[in-house]
Image (cartoon, rainbow, N blue to C red; front, side):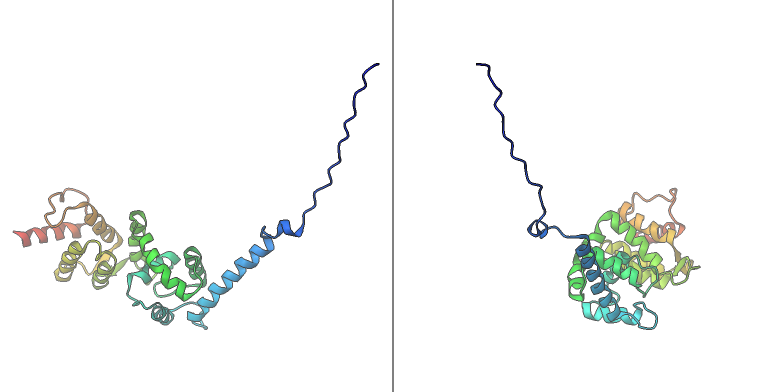
Length: 233
């Protein structure tokens, strides 16, 4: 008898339908939007807690209030670091956009969380590449006028102590002493400010054996070098 091909019966698969249980763990676009909106609301509520109702920004009085809640002085370097994280453009003032930028990056939405985040922020800033940017920012932040490009020596001395004092104590103390007794400079420029940072990182101190007057250092540092040599003679 001739063979006949056996027929294979295939079951037709039923179309897969998505059930509610399948989607329970998948966040929808709307739920993500709601979560983001809620987070922003919390940040803005916190902002409004310290903001001036008339100007719509956190002004010096609001920063004082914030510092009180954070239990830090308004002259603490952590507040300057927070301003750096916000990319704040005006000394003593935080806008809503700047506030949101920092709190979003730090992943905080309450004063308590912000306080806990400050030590980690300081670690972030202390990383060499970040610190160079922060150091330059500290100078720009103290420029109180758009046309201003230099800072008075008294403020520079205070700023050096705050920003570099903990890292280059000996260099800062001697340089500040020099700035206070010299009469050639009433203000400091960004070039001089950045030059001193380079000096601290590159020149052995206090012997300064690798410092050369022939190299392109700001003149104020040449004068500081010669003042130091006279003291050591």
